[in-house]
Length: 118
Image (cartoon, rainbow, N blue to C red; front, side, top):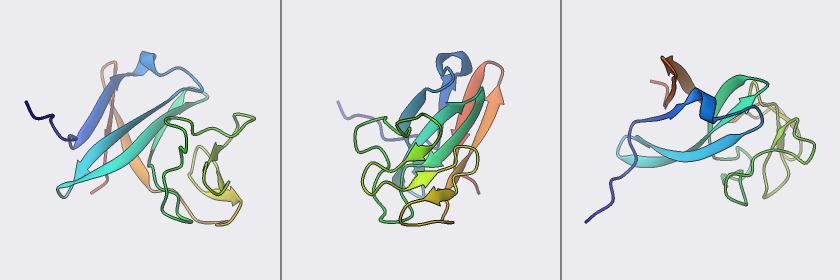
């Protein structure tokens, strides 16, 4: 049996992602798998494409490990670029001012739904 590929949206129950937690997944966009992740930062949810704007590598060198050591920022495990969780803007490291590609986070009752922007 073949495994199904990524869907065009990703869902989870909002309560399953507590503050400080993250989840990595893939979305389908134009027939390609897009690596992505969602975070709960201070009770708000943000989602980004899992690709550092500096080198194009995944942020989580260790699977689903996106936070800096102090837990205040997102950090690229490859080159140490540091990003604001709320905006995805790089505030320290090799690509200051560059931005992670944001994804759309919506709600459907108790569920969070992440999709690629149009």
